[in-house]
Image 1 (cartoon, rainbow, N blue to C red):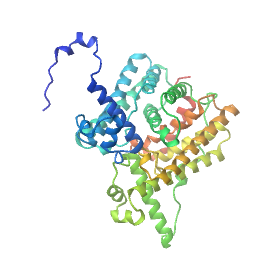
Image 2 (cartoon, rainbow, N blue to C red):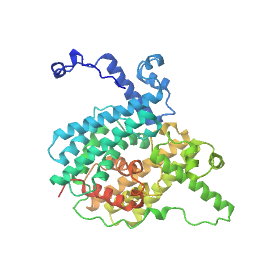
Image 3 (cartoon, helix red, strand yellow):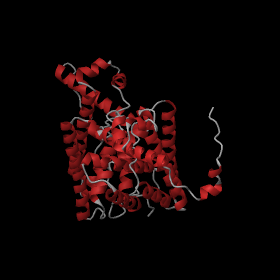
Image 4 (cartoon, rainbow, N blue to C red):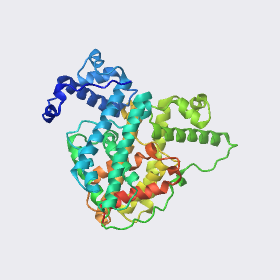
Length: 428
């Protein structure tokens, strides 16, 4: 049973009124968590050793054990720090405005503050075990619920248009998380300047949307399910083998998106397929090979979505939103192309360079759609490069939180996320 800690004299209300400067140990711990967070986001957990983190933080490995017992505890501390910071941002935002929209905007402004140290992207909660995992799951869920409540409050007080508050809240959290990772994937500038632009772009998006006029965007003319593999000849050995390999990669992508790459073993993948791990090794050299194949399939699909958007959209706004809708359907439904995750630098160099080149090209394609929209009058002027970069977080988070029942209605999520982009949240 946990013991009740006695209040020390210096922790009385009088003492709290004049906060003391952080101690040297507290400052070193914060620096350690910031360095660890940066490395975990960039390299992933497995590829980041305690020696790497100690070196980045300017500590000896022996000194690092003064703060944590092992890598798993350090991951937990980084995740806990991220959850606590989000909870604090939400608490401050609830006091910053009386209406729901004002509170949501205040939260986003705090979360994107330029002086904020790196925040852990909570993509590998299942890597943790026992009480640590339960605590982070609970804290993460409560933060999402609190932001959802702010959106719901806005719909009641008239500051936010009618919308699915859960989708709006999760989309915002997804874009904030992707803002942490995307500079690595598209090799774009990061730091305070990028954070200032991200804050301005997201606040403008949420207040005003990107559509030049308040109007309904035509329904997406394509179902993402049409990109699923077609029929094949089960009696043709080559076709059968290709379909089995494709099924393996699709299943692995679904699990990686939902549970995280680090937290998913080959045993997990083979169990989901109802096969033995030997079957996985029959088609893949190892887990790294499987991850690379999943990413390659993912980018094939992302590029196909962009081609379809370019073909079917009548103007820049429609093209951008068809792309958003298809990606949202894909992440909510069965297709589930692997979204970029923490751990980019742990991939073999040739594959890493090829994937970042493709990611940057996709950002460029969606930026071109938005620029076309500004030119043809369908889009408002906006920070095109930033929105094209961080906007993917709105649908990238879907596999982390939707229910099996939700997955039966992927177009609904596409409709909601497109409305968030075109209309923003502000009631007209």
